[in-house]
Length: 303
Image: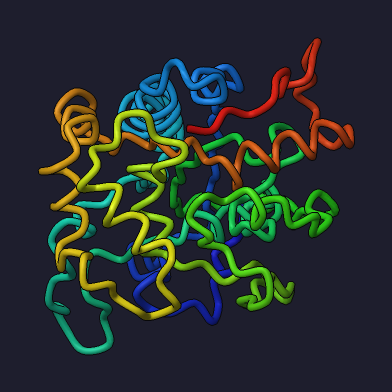
């Protein structure tokens, strides 16, 4: 639980106080990504489980049900509950027009990772993912804004991310800078993470790279290779203006993923930001979710 004053200084477009000005508290809910959902990608034999059950099922099925039940509890006690799931129509259509002076353009887009920090759930690692003491990088989030005067939890003290830089080394897109960082201050606490090339991340997250994507058509491989090799801000001649539409049209596995469970294929399998980080944190004994054996049991595959 976080207090709404911790959002002080946030850009209006990301400030949930514009959604519910009378809100006093934000309630964070975390939903684990089962380690086993990464197993098939680790072995190179089953890629659908992670995006279907680790993304779509959490964001669009389970989390909304839990949000509803917690929201019922809050509203049964006479307080409003604004349920905020991990999805956004705005990502597909752009922002709307501000309805009045001083108001941001809808929809206000809650920064989930900052919100998780504000709720005291964890820290932002160098990868820009939230790391929690329970599961490291393996969770997704949902939130509730409420006017209930709840006691806020303290901010997480940190200590999970040791800047091992394995997320940088193992990211197949080369999307996380090893030298440039982004710094923001939240509730008096400075947060810092590696600068992310969001275009490379989003493309390779869906398609993978030719070395780690068994379903990739050759024409798409040419585009992805050029994109990964491009410098910051450069647009290769081979890269379509609507890259996401191109991938959906020309990459059958991605298209079927959208049609089957309304989510990208996630063929990258979070190789650096989740898998490499998870393996490192587990080896160090920093996460509470302990397993009988290590995750990586064999030499990683590569085409």
